[in-house]
Length: 363
Image (cartoon, one colour):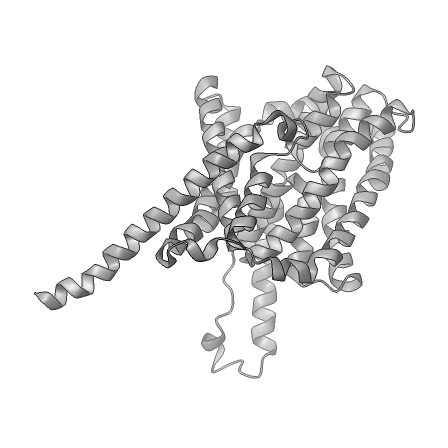
């Protein structure tokens, strides 16, 4: 009897520790949400997600030793499993009807910007800046699709280390915040030569975060903000096909690596080639888009779920921050920011060129 008790005790203690860890992250995220709601921070379009990873990283690198070791399982759960669930429910913010409103021009701008930025960012990061593959892809994804939420989704599919996500999010924060001031200035200075539809296509097609798009476009007008927000959500929608393509590519690369290794053949199972990583949360995202498009849920319920989802994403970001080590960030930081800067110049110059071309052909 005593043996059974001693064997079951650690298991119970572990699950209790995990719950404590999740509760700790939840309370931390609640404080972060209050902090992000302060006018000085909210006015800059900085989302609770970004405040969460910064606050989490500060805690993780200064006070982490004070956290009980068995809480780490709860922190890890928040940064991994909760993250996937939250990314899936992010789909309730998008509807097919809204995407149809901006039609072919909005979809074309979104696809061209996303594909070109992902390809350019990955190539630049690996070949020119000598970043590791995951950091390059995460930095490119944050710029190309939807900022911190895209970094989280890609981090989950790549199964990369938290510090790589922190580096990529740093780029999103810096250049996305800059866009909120620079884009309206460029418009007022008459440098863009775009009508209201064009401004919406350009702002929504090239600015990093949803909040930053709204913040920048609201300085132009209500119609431009409406178009920009829908184009931005069209970019968010592209997260699903891009993640599926990434999953196929990772599986193929893994098979090629195993085939090329000296232990191929009889010892192949020892090297465990990566299975096709179909990210279920991407399919969940798509299901949520369909639910939102069919108006199955009343608007009040959708708003409540979205608020809860933002909190879950903030928890995931805070947990990632706690797991991040500044020393690791410092190693890739300057090169990742340089990659983010080049991509930012591409988003402005290339994005403007894409918008002009699409407007003339399809507008």
